[in-house]
Image (tube, rainbow, N blue to C red; front, side, top):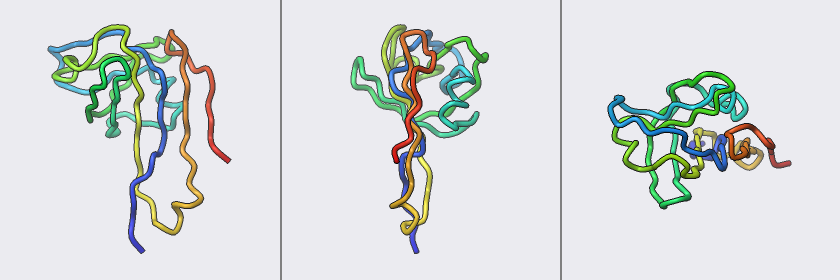
Length: 122
């Protein structure tokens, strides 16, 4: 059977807290948010900016736990400014037969990048 890519998890409504053009790339994110969504350091992600419709692929680096940090680094820093609201998505490859029962984790955050709610569809 073949593999397909599905949404593994997403963090919805995170707010950009910084943009660091002179770092070599990635998105620095509060480790607490990464854990809530089951995401790991260096995982490939898709970032969608709700404030300006930009989309980009990058990867995570851990930010300090409980800090609320959400910082685009390197060239990605040109895709957002402080205060922009984003959605962060990760994906997985799964056997087509198992795909019908897969349910992604959805983490919703408040204006301080703190977890408000975690949903897993039933």
